[in-house]
Length: 436
Ligand code: GLN
Image (cartoon, rainbow, N blue to C red; front, side):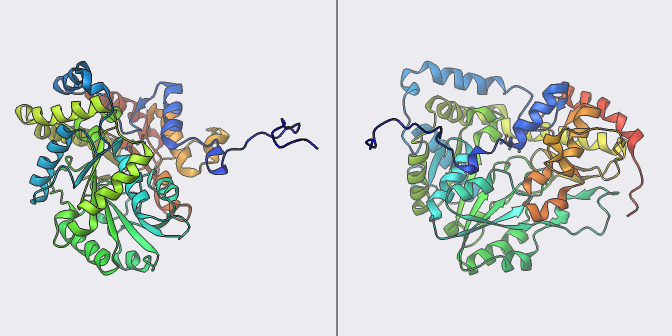
């Protein structure tokens, strides 16, 4: 009889959890790899292909030169950044925001969301979180990690025009309130609301938010408002649900310096809400990452301080609007319809009219991810322009709602968009009628 401390003679080795042992790549890595393999113009992942403004880069460089900015930040965040965020949200929310109670800084908005889910969900109780589809691909795994169960309610296209033939508005994508309410059970704890919306570009109206808020109130749900694109709307007003009557008390709003200042690699985000929500979120954050990086928090604080003298947010918004209009014009010219985004930096193009040549071959790693991945793969390999398959933002039963669409990001250089325009001209030869 050997003791338990003796080395095992069996060949067994430790096994990771089946959830993470899967070798299936996330959509971003996969599509970046396919795009790189053919040198495609990358309109896939939503990162900026243009550099940050000089004052923003300098803000980070200067932060690193300050010795104390190279050590741990307090878990809640650096006081300078908390102060800037409190000022910003005091203005945006029309109520005084306490920097030391109602704000927390996170390692990107993703980690802010994970911290909120962790703070509000209990393991082993099957507590449910309503996600509106298309839902950013990180929500589902983050809800599950926090012990919750995602429940999906798809946005429905309400236009009487056929989106395979006609340009429609992101406003035409609506949450069916009856469907939303029917999905709520006694186990529902949270509804996630993303406005401006990735990938649809929908900016929820005040009226829609009021209706969603009323249902959340009736069922005592926490609203997690993912507003990382709050600064990018085109001709419509961004309304934070936290500003509607009675909603501050049930909302945590999440934001992102990566999106706001065009520095997605900095991984600085935040959460804003009532003290008791943020203190629980902060407790979770402290045990997930303890604290987020100090120098770039200081860089963001400094960028906030300098933004007004550069008219930064106004200039940035109009630059994005120009990029959006250019990409829409490219598809107008080709003859493929799309969903006009009222916010964010994505264009959903409906490619139902595209006829893929019969002899075109797809590798197994694409075929196994479904029809929509094949469509996007074809765009990359044949036209040299990459996008993202939006079925990745849907649960299995609803994936077919997105099969015809490709998401293109327009947070890209003018040169990149022009290069894409040239490559995409080839599409014209592959268009067919879409009679059913
Ligand atoms: N939010 C960005 C997008 O949707 C990047 C997402 C990511 O890389 N995880 O493209």
